[in-house]
Amino acid sequence: MGGERELLLAKLRDAVRTAWRRPCFLGFLDESQAAFCREALRREPGEYLLWGGYEGAERVMAGFFPDYMEPAYEDFPISALTFIYRPGDKLSHRDFLGSFMGLGIERSVIGDLLVEEGRTVAFVRREMERYFLESLRKIGRTGVRITAGYQGPLPVLREYKDISGVIASDRLDCLAALLCRTSREKAARLIASGAVLVNHQEVLSVDRRLEERDIISVRGHGKFILDSFGPLTGKGRLTVKCRKYQ
Image 1 (cartoon, helix red, strand yellow):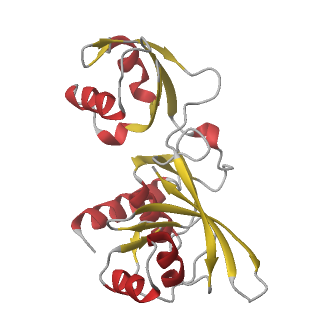
Image 2 (tube, one colour; image 1 turned 120 degrees about the vertical axis):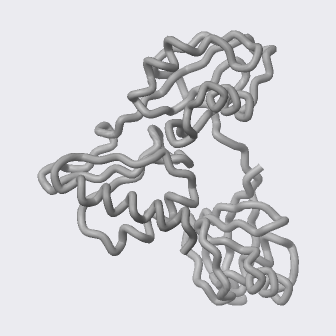
């Protein structure tokens, strides 16, 4: 286990102990950290939730709760902020993150940044809400108006490309071959080389069984979500639907 993972594990265990007395929140965590958290907490007592402020968030907080509390999303100290600017000002995720970092704001304070033309919704730790509202007037050289909360549908976090096909089974080598448009033999070599992650964790076994909602990353080929396994074909093969991150 690397030093970063050891530190995160120590923080998780501290949070579990603190939650014997009161709720405790850790993060925001990125997808890899959240996956590690899920795995590590299988062996720890107590109640916990992962939540990023909206359904399907990539960056999430880990919330730990004492036995006398029912874990609930509304207890998380997360605030949404809306940044309004001229539609012609083409601001990106990198522009926002760079401005935040330039103010000395730590990455762990910031959740997902949902960017669209003329509007961005950012999820931040609640204790930082006032600082953002009172201190930020520009992103780069672009003037912005900031309000608490958001109205209407959230901007889309990212676009996807649909992928479907037929595979021999739910094994990792079968699906990797489909996703990378290569043979099972070449897919197996990719897996053995450490180039394939499942739910942000390296997997070296070609016969790893996959489940719906698994996230598969293949170095040099992209990142994918396994949406569903469909019915068997007449020849006994398995239909599958996935999406590729764009």
